[in-house]
Length: 120
Image 1 (cartoon, rainbow, N blue to C red):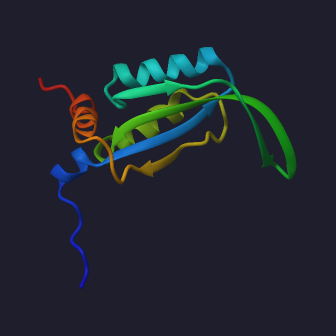
Image 2: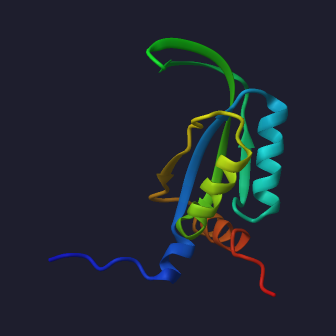
């Protein structure tokens, strides 16, 4: 037995936690503000700087970065990803989406409402 794909209405309610890292606080705050203003994210948390260790172009690198956590819906993810890519200073930005399996019903509904495209 196969499950049917979610209906478009379901996608407006399915919440994602999207993670990205930026090189400094100003860039992180600017991106977060732009995404919330555009209703692509209901909320953005700009976290304290961290140290990232990663392999890039065959070398192990270390960089100080500012993590940003974004709350959005499945329905808005493609637009959110495109907006991050358009504004992100990195050649290959980290953009990772994690499905929210459970949460406070009122909060999850708020995320859906705040990321709904504005009606004309």
